Length: 439
Image (cartoon, rainbow, N blue to C red; front, side, top):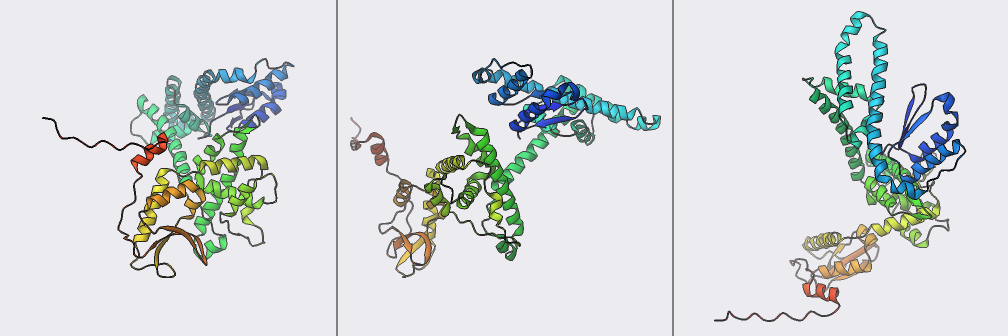
């Protein structure tokens, strides 16, 4: 769940909650000069040092003064700020629920006595909810989840009504239960988005194969990923450098497959731009992004082109994402095991000439593998006649073995001695022979 950067309120009773630092700073900048007439007040919550300094700069400026504190001051008080922010979240939630109860009370007093009696139980329970919240703190995540609701007190009361008991412990359980439900929903939504596969084919193909639902879901996720890249670059660009947390921020939401797919589409669309490196342009051409025209001839691929980010920063982000997307030992072992299984499946040689058994190396592996990774893959497959080869009129790279090979062999395990030699740079002497037990 996004952190609440700050809140703003006005004399009219209107309240705003901000999760975007830029929008929060802009609102403070625009409203601060008119606070005497609008009743504008603000509170900083979970903001980073740069955001807190920017807001303080505006406040000092209103009084014609310069902020005496530099960025280092705000960075050194980070832990203190987080403690205050935690307390402020619970306070803000209590104040919002209290105002909600006051509005409910004012409405109740305009009703007939009979109508008021009908709502006595609800009013009492809502008062108990406030009392429980006054004496107990929620976690930051729970408080933030409830605070973003337009009517958190009513939400908790509706949850409470589903329970059979009305004791005070149950009231607190109900508050945390509602908050946890909201947290779980967001976590489930994030997991579903992360696991949603990229649908690479155009809408016309999806329509012909009755896969429009998958196409639309993937296309919507591509657009969301585009926006997430813009946000991540903005969040992590500091002091003329792009922090490595930018890629992680996007990948945690969308995974590497979709992130790289959106980046490849973007780079391909910007092939004319000299601010993007040739290496990234060449890589982008290896990712299949099919033409996807709409009914008016427009290109749907343009809908998930990252356009708000400066091309130079986009190039840095793309390079970091590609570098981070490296193969692990487990990935190489999985590919070796998959290829071995494919080589063992056919009853007869399956090469075009009928003289070899063959299996195609996955495109994902080839895109991510360095020359060393390919060497490791080669060394794990237990065949003397093993070769990596292309085949005429077929795309991709294939592993091939002679039809005389014994295919019923396990994968090779790395030599312990070779590992030690690589680590020390010199051959390991042979172990001495075991001697018999001395008598």
